[in-house]
Length: 139
Image (cartoon, rainbow, N blue to C red; front, side):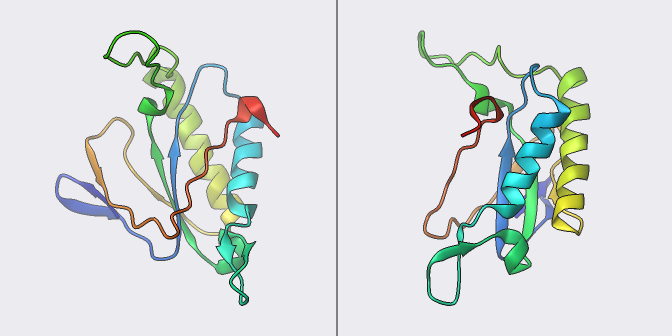
């Protein structure tokens, strides 16, 4: 669930909370690759309890939140540096394209936050399963 100013902006049942870190080097190719990976990643249990189904297979939902702190560098000192995170003039168009691409790939609208807003995000992490994907290290 995602709250803005105390009001629910987006909520889902079974699905994915995607935290998106955007840097200047990100491209439309990265958006396409990442969206395809997200909706097709087989991380949900099938009827036999094996992680063999995607959010698409399960008919699940997605909430996408732009999260610049994912690019925090903690190499020096105790105050993180966010120098790798894109400024809003670059990040907002990429975030909006990612919303469109995920909506297309999932086949239905996704939930979102508001770029730069103070949001409260609640997560029930089943498993827990948390996966980091980086378009710069496609493996």
